[in-house]
Length: 375
Ligand SMILES: [Ca+2]
Ligand SMILES: [Ca+2]
Ligand SMILES: [Ca+2]
Image (cartoon, rainbow, N blue to C red; front, side):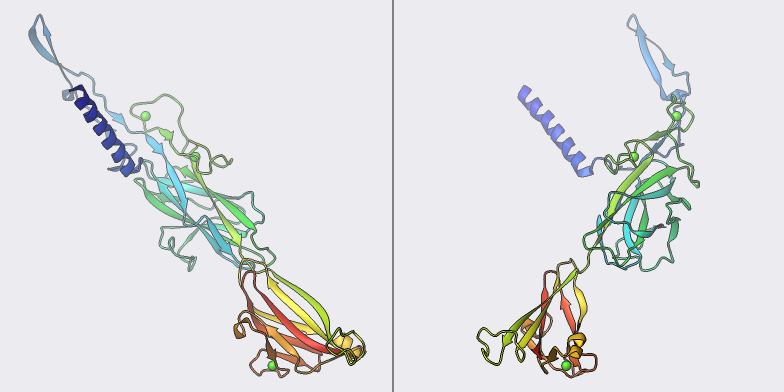
């Protein structure tokens, strides 16, 4: 019998734990009672029955009317569409998307401040925008036309926005520009802090530490610490913050050029030396060690100084190209003629070799070769 009861008790506990787990802990089955609501308990609600010497006596009713007012529980959270957003050097209006949810029991206004912290670069022209949501799940903000700017480039608060209680959300966009000098993998961290304000104002909704007054709506900060230890947000301070970052993804090209003698009039191709009449091959290698593909790469290599000085002469029709996006990465000949479709040529006037239309993804390389004769 005792075992049966114990088993039953464990079953109830297990079901309770399961229900809590399924419910996610904080979700309200019904909306929380709104702050300012008057809860009335009339005299007829309470009856006290009693006996004296075993004989029932007339019941006693509560004599006090204990009406009270529900206080304001300030609580909001934030999340991001993506904690890390790739940006390109020279790009503008890159977007970090934050979502603010009012999980308290009163409609509130909020103001936003944003801070660039602990990064390896800074974003420029950082502005914060508010929207009711349609852009949030998209890859980008298509236009700022429907958005409201709420924080300017100097982190000044321009205006508030309102979010109703009972899990209503607002959407916050942080936009930033990057100059074309930023390097691959550099990071700009953006900490966004939302502070609860009295509805329709930018006045902080401050917690009251005095004793409860039963018929007055008072404020209790119930928010968590969104950034987990940074200085911009703490447990129960009326604020909630969240961090997201811009990360530069760009191509980083390196170029090297070497030469090798491939023939002389006496040794021919066996151990040739760099004597007058010998053929020397110039080999230029372009490689990409960055995180993004480089396109429209064009090499222009002038030998004008040497040719004009009479020390070398260009060997006609000697240009060779190997590039991942051309001819299956197998070396092939580029004609000296311009505008003939192979995207390369010898400019006899300027004494320069041009080879274009090369694409290099991360860790790829291309090789351009041409020959000259020592004069
Ligand atoms: Ca109160
Ligand atoms: Ca907080
Ligand atoms: Ca050509």
